[in-house]
Image (cartoon, rainbow, N blue to C red; front, side, top):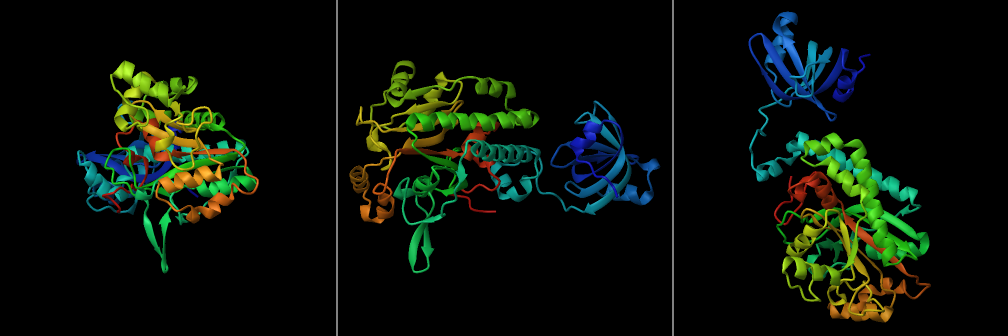
Length: 432
């Protein structure tokens, strides 16, 4: 049987007979010579067919090839510095497996056109590189949490309550009733830590936000964790540890992909080696005032413009803690030493990529939780099951959610978060 090699395996072989298969990425030629660049998931390679060295039917088949036709090729590989990846295959045998129509994607097409044809644009070298990095990142995260002694815990996607703000809920008809798509696993994870103590998950999350920025998606994948007995410092330092572990795995496996995407891999290595600072919200607004001339009064959340200005002064991700209690979600407790501050944090990425992680210690005071819910216009009786968690052996606990697409956008140096996921969903896009 033929031993098929990936294109990268063939390149690594450097010389001798090889058998490869893939799709036509580029093609050009003359009446005597045909150059076909083949791609697979591993790389690309130039293949050369000489008319006077192959059977006529093979030459005719090669001459009819169009972009994205699938082929099997056998031949001899040799080094050729003029070829796109430095090697070239002299073709002895070619078989067309699947013919291709006129492929609709060419150069210089609009981002919207590429999104309309996302099912085909996934084949591009750019999207292939991003999706490979995404896969490695997610697998590294699974490995990290197993090593840290966490249990994987899967929550429901259909949930009766909001956790991040009622205005961003997606309502779902549920037989004769209504429910909502998950904004976060958090409330259910809090139930789980009283059994498993340390839990994590990776699941789709939904926010009905009308934002049309390069940072927002209506459906994204949240990487979340929750741990019993942990405080704010425990959880915020752990978030740094998680991202560093996953970034290290990406750098070890995908340096070439990062460079292809325009990312400076050496810069990321330096970021990985540095300590990532933690500052308080009050220190952050002081920096904005003194160094950026931006007067942000205590009690206002940091918008994109303030986050970007703050990150002008840092070249690594940073953690900002103790945001104003009055603007935080109901489950974020007040700091006993500073009641106007919440025991919470955000992690901000450099270079304008904004918030990538959000987390907090969780409030264990039933009365405080009820008061916060009422201030939000919520009925505490709708959260009785959640409040029960505080009645039966409650303990301090903390957790966070990491926006996978936001982290990947930063790591891959992407202009738009839509490219960090295979099929993006936004306020204006729900297909293909």
